[in-house]
Image (cartoon, rainbow over all chains, first blue to last red; front, side, top):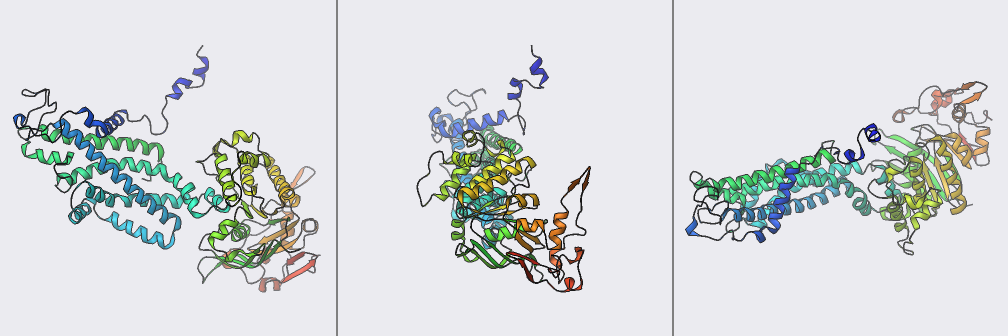
Amino acid sequence: MSATSEGSGLGPFRRRFTWGRGGRPPIVATTICVILVIAALAGRNFITLAPDEVDFTAILTPPVWIEGGSWEHLLGTDQLGRDMLSRLVAGARISLLTACAAVIAGGTIGIALGLTAGYLGGLAEAVIMRVVDAFLALPFILMALAFVAALGTGVGNIIIVMVLTNWARYARLVRSEVVLIKQRDFVLLARVAGLNRRAIALRHILPNVLTSILVLAILDVGRAIILESSLSFLGLGIQPPDVSWGLTLAEGRTYMTVAWWLTLWPGVAIVLAVMSFNAVGEWLKARFDPRGQL
Amino acid sequence: MEPLLAIRGLNVRFGPSERPVPAVADVDLDVAPQEIVGIAGESGSGKSTLCGAIMRTLVRTARVSGEVMFSGRSLLTLNDGEMARLRGRELSMVLQNPMTSLDPLYTIGNQVEEVLRERRRDGAGLRPGGAIEVLRRVHLTAPELRVRQYPHQLSGGMRQRVLVGMATAAAPKLLIADEPTTALDASIQDEILILFRELRETAGSAVIIVTHDLSAIRRLSDRVVVMYAGRIVEEGPTGEVFRAPRHPYTRALLASLPRIEGDEVHLEPIPGQVPDLASLPPGCAFAARCPVAKDICRGQRPPESVVADRHRLFCWRAEETA
């Protein structure tokens, strides 16, 4: 009865559930990413306590499963009696918002400049790529510190700083891909078919580099979360009363010996978020970029 | 008759200006309206570079000089925008490799429509089914299905039909086909070549077909141009050149075609190698391989000799080879 499906190696059912290049997608990491995104977008609807609501009657309450904990504060409270869970959710919002904004804005600038440099070549390419080299040569934390010192802190400025530190990587990747793709025969066909340069660049070259860009962008979210947390931890990023994981971590440091939950939860949140976005990005990279150019 | 395309003194050089590599040298060529001209020659003889110079698709480092007049306009002096408007409408091209010439991200229908849209920018809007009509004209089977398929779902011959359809959608005055059948199966080649002939009938286009397949030129073209090391060595009506080639290189090229006599296959390769374009001898580039070369051939470049109506060659022994 099953002779046909056995004879063909994998039956139709098995074949459908055999993963291609890159192997099985990272389910745990994907789930964590999805949860983080939901928490960032809609978390405020589930959490009843405001993240900055001070309650001096409940200072340093431990998590619920430890003696002295209460169901009102599942993950405990901080030195001002603020609920840790709502602070984590609020932090997720800020972290993901800044990371995504930085990736999207930096990616857009990088793509535009990389496409211009790669497609036009000549002087435009020389100028753009030298600027890219200069930005890539600077250690990014150092550059971020310099920009924060110049621009000041706050969510908007943090996003600007992160864009300034990441656009160059997009520009470099896009330019190298464009240089390859513009040699392809279909670009020559578009030329002899009478398309103008703008149409060729936007319709035939850009779509062919987008896969690589998307992979880089996902990997970059993890990197951006680390950068924002680092800056906030150092006091150069998000400022109170806004909430960020790095900031929460820094504030809890003083109480580490008496109330470990103040530092553990934001630390775990940062690690999980970064690892998850990286795992998803690596999987996409294995699937869509087997040559390993990123 | 006024020629559609008139090339005068066309030179294309690559490399540093102190030591230029002349890929195309001193080419004069006329193409009449509705004429099919075949350009033959070995690899590296400058055939494709010549096409690129006409279409202005050469790399930026190529230095092109001379004059290319196309229906009253000087192509080499047009700005990029004017050239782009001319391409695909009046002047069109079929590329060498159908396997890689379509964008893998778009359906066949999308790509044909994109070309049609460019054409009609000034005229009427895009008619529905325009793409299908284009594909039907090049005898692509099941065009209704093909417009929804992606390039990888089509065979090489089908893709070449699509490319021919795209190139001819606007009934161009001149179509340049750069080795249009090289990448295809022998059985498909004929069908593609027939398309060019049909195109001349239906659209009134002139065709320049570049190939090293001499039999294709013989069957298809009105006139043949033989190139060697970037220069035209012989040009004449196809029948006459194939029946009685005058230039020793043309003779060698025709003799190198495999002939079957009885049970044996005869192959007569041309002895020697194509010269290095960067260090050409002062005289005739073919002299080193030529069976009838004399001293003057090595020392001085041969002048043009007109041996019959519209039949000319560049050879010191032009008178003797008759």
